[in-house]
Length: 117
Image (cartoon, rainbow, N blue to C red; front, side):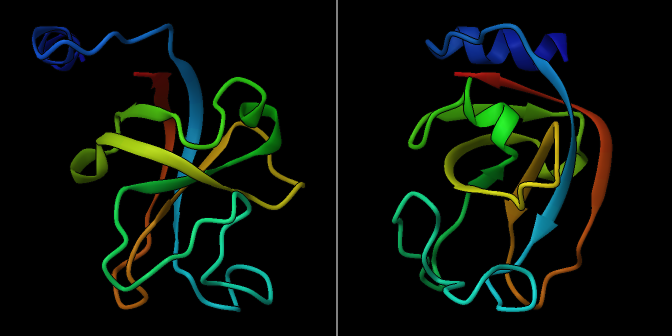
């Protein structure tokens, strides 16, 4: 984590205090979203080339606004910078969903960290 923080600071990114969250993955399909899987809650249109976007639970949305960049760590190959574009189902708290391709393998990570960049 310290190496990633130093790397981010070294390239001019400012990282704020992190929140501990559960991270899962989702695909833009009707079975995992609503009746408009290619349109996010922010109005962003998902294409087959769309990458590096996340959906947040409503409690996190108060801190991380649509369009903001976030750094997510502690999730292996998925660790990195994402843009907030969507919301999860209202039943979730402290949850981040990473958009992946419909044929990619789904994953779940507990105790990941998210912070503003």
